[in-house]
Length: 189
Image 1: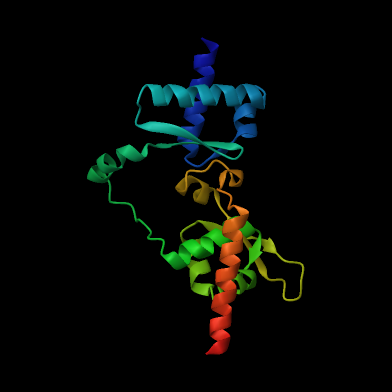
Image 2: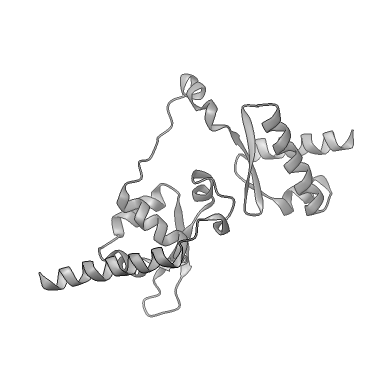
């Protein structure tokens, strides 16, 4: 019976907070250690999935969040104003990929990789909540550093940055060759 009460408390916390809640805070709130708390939450995750509920719990690095299942979206828009859906253009996806894999990264480093100004792309990604300022580089001018957010993890359904796909060395070499060819073309013009 105590397990059900603890899980009810976790559910209430996650529902009320809306955003993700760190495992350490959940553990503190229910008076148990982090491992026990993780087991309780993961059991809840399995139960929600098994019972085909309209909500689910997602894990984001060392946090958990209660959210609506994607399959319920069509029902939600019938009663709520349709949420603003952001379109990620190729430019935004390219910029986001650079930030995700190179973070923390400055705008100058992004521009060096892309070969073009990236102010608009970076600003849009910040506006969409997918990247954020993470500090300043200890260099002249103290440029801003950017990294991905929890919203990035949610949107791309990854638990942590470690879950991002890795490029194999052959792909990396191919991309380098393409970039060098492109740079040579610009010089020839």
